[in-house]
Length: 208
Image (cartoon, rainbow, N blue to C red; front, top):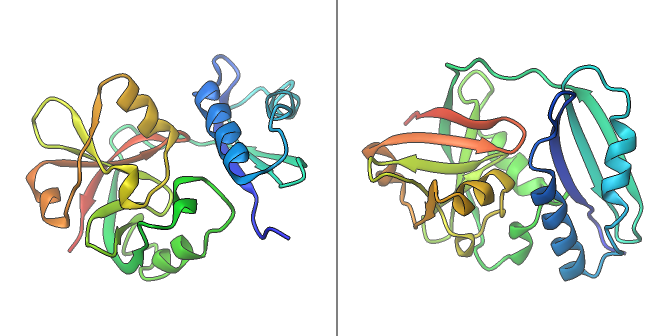
């Protein structure tokens, strides 16, 4: 029996609907197909039912099991302040770039939880993981972006061993971001951001 489910975490706003819904559903469908999960076509209707009548922004979490079972939970969503800056640190834990499951969003979270436990919430808002070669991969809940003044954001390639984040995909498709391998030393050469589809881009400061 497979020991994990697929996840999508979305932001819902009554006046706008789900943020980036097509990209979330496309990633879920693609991952389900690759892993031999049941058809994910019921995800869209399940999400719509979960937010029916909602009057305030929500954080919406959907899980898809191998047999096609879907569960959707909601919670109030409170956005970050526009001038928020997250303190980030680099974990000693390493990701294995050959692990293809890292490219999909699943409930297999032990690698990220281990990295998060390396620092208290008082010491870091987010923790960045490297792979076995020392390349930057991603945060525990975010993708990583670097603005080095070249006119676009740089973000690590999937081949380094990281999730195909929905925000990351959108920025690449809009040509606001470009894939490029990054080392920890590169982060000192520009403005660092982390982000995900739920919260968008967040200014970040690397703490040594």
